[in-house]
Length: 311
View 1 (cartoon, rainbow, N blue to C red):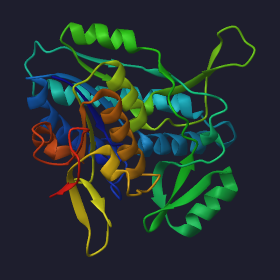
View 2 (spheres, rainbow, N blue to C red):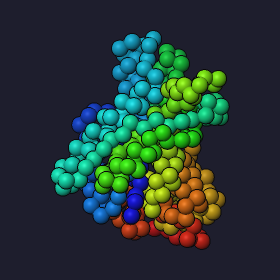
View 3 (cartoon, one colour):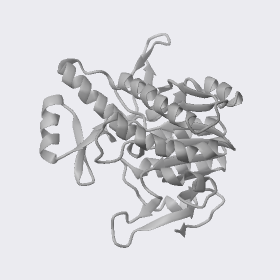
View 4 (cartoon, helix red, strand yellow):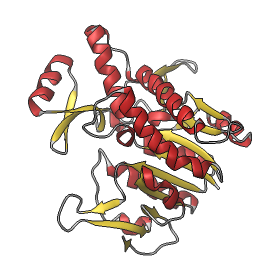
C-alpha cells in the first residue's frame, strides 16, 4: 500500500514538555519505532506538524531582534529541515542501510483572500498562563486563544490550494524512498496580485492535516493516517461519559462537532479524504500506528461503514 502518515506537532513535542532538542528527538524516536515496520512493507510518505517548533523559533527570533521577527514562512521552512533531519536519522537507525530517505522543502499555495486570514485559529508555540498571554499580546501584537486550561498564540490558517513539489515526491516514491515532506502544512506561499507569477511567502501556518489530505489525494494513497497524542476521536472528551469512536462513516461522525484548533481539522480532513477517494483515513496515537494500519486501533473513517462502532 501507499500510506501517508501525518505526525502531530504536539505528538512530537508533548504538551508541557520542555521545548528542547532532546525531548523532541525522544518523541521522534517513538514515532520512528512505530513507522519503521510499516516502511518495510509499504510505500510511506511522512508529514508532520510544527506548531510548538514554530512558536519556539519565533520566541528565539524575537529575543534576538524583537522589531524584526522572522516571518512564519521562513520559520516553517526551518522546522521542515530540523524535524526532517531527526526523522531521517532515527528511521535510518532502524531500517536497512539500503532504504533511501529524502526530506523535501515543500511550498504550498494559498489564496490571499482566504477567510482564515481574518480569523486566526492555528495554535503555535508553548502554553501560557492568562497573565503572561495578555502581556505578550500587548508587547508583540500576537493573538491568543484558550487551549484547555492554558492560553496559546494563534495565527491565520488558510486552506492549501496546490503543492508545488508534488512531482518530485512521486519521483522519489517510485525509486523506493521514504519521503518526508509538507512539514507543518508546507511553506505558505501565494502569487502577488497583478504580478507575473511572482511567488512570495505568507505570514500564516497551513493546517498540516488538510495539507496532508491534499497530498494523500494527489499521491493516490491507499490510507491516510493522522497520528496525534490521543488514542482516537472521542465524543464528550474530558467528561466522565467520554467514548472513543472506532469505525465510522463521514456522515455519521459529521453529526458531532469537535474543537476547531485541535481535533476538528483532523476529522474534517479524514472525512474529506474518505469521501473524495473511497479509501480509509484514520486518527490515533503514534505508538498505535502498526495496529491502525490493520484497522485494530484508532478511529477509522470510511465510506464503507454506515454507522459508528465504539472502542
